[in-house]
Image (cartoon, rainbow, N blue to C red; front, side):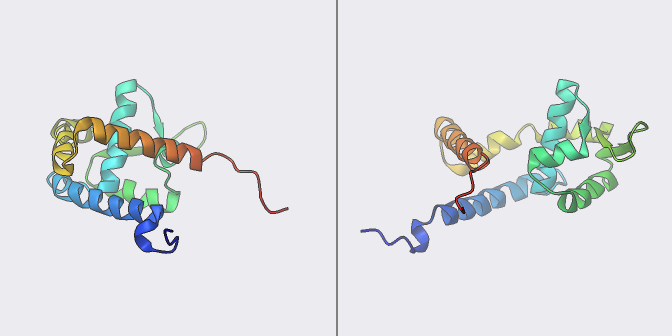
Length: 153
């Protein structure tokens, strides 16, 4: 019988260790763009929103990346200082802050186009295996984010 309290038997540890390893693979690629991994994630969402012609509110960005404002605000400040994004308050509701890419932020997209392909090579997995893993992780996340009935009565 498999011991349930052995570290290597834990799904959480496999996810944690894989996350750290993947982030480490990204680090040198993103350093050449002047971005950290969390900043890259922000830029991905903003590039996607711009391509769709959709405005991006800070609150929507936080939901999409599953980040709270305490984590997101310093990230956005650094991207703003790097002149990659600009923030503006809504004139109708000053609580709403909207983001837009600057020309420098738009231009950075071209330089980032090689990152996904380079990451595929660095993982050593073929594209089908990597995409299947991504789909399994997305399904897991979807399942975990489902509202749960309280088991405590």
